[in-house]
View 1 (cartoon, protein in one colour):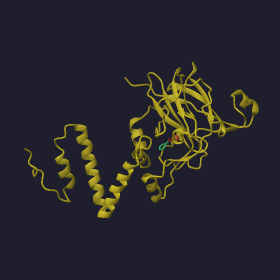
View 2 (tube, helix red, strand yellow):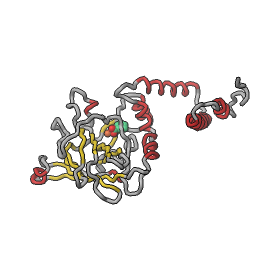
View 3 (spheres, helix red, strand yellow):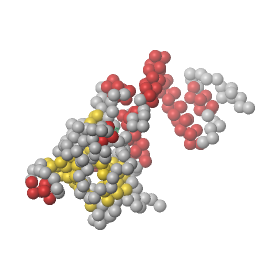
View 4 (cartoon, protein in one colour):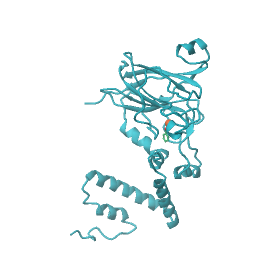
Length: 295
Ligand code: BEZ
Ligand code: FE
């Protein structure tokens, strides 16, 4: 029988030590370590903030409402992690790349696992809305050699800033999504529409928090990519429009300088016809460099 008083009674001064000691028989060492760090930092924060009972209850209600709004399509805790910068921090810790490899960024909640594999050059825009865009580039290794047969999973919001899954019954299924495989030269190309900035879902507690903090909910225009090839680390990333009004204030901190692409406006009808598009269109060229798997 463990003596409950072995480590002393709870006092304001010893609060974290007393709780940490209580977890000493945890079966999982990692859980014990994680809970010790969280307990110590949380107690430190509470001691610095000195919340009133009302403030603490407001915090509990915020977390309660964050859980209550979650469903199969809505994950408010991921949004919370995103706007706190924690998603990007976890991403950075888990994706330290060798020099020369493309940088990663957040996955976001709108990826769909079973998007169709399409012939190279396909138009992923199924509703003919928006300004035409031609996207192309190469998948390379860190020695600049092309990677043939790499799988490229792309998805983007439409001209109004919505993903197909947010507008079921309005946008066609799999609108603005596609999976492609690079050719022998590591090349990929497809057609889409110029993306627009959009708000992260902001009708819940996280949106309310952003408003109270004087922050907007917008993400700058971007295209999502997951690039995978055998023997290489998978890359989850975006490319961004550097001219977007929110490029320096992404609500989820996802922008990295190396991920800024050029959205070049092309007026020439002949150039447009060559890529199966009507002029004017936006030409976006972007190469990705994959790091080799270790071991
Ligand atoms: C997105 O880019 O799809 C996204 C990322 C984080 C939160 C909401 C949306
Ligand atoms: Fe997105």
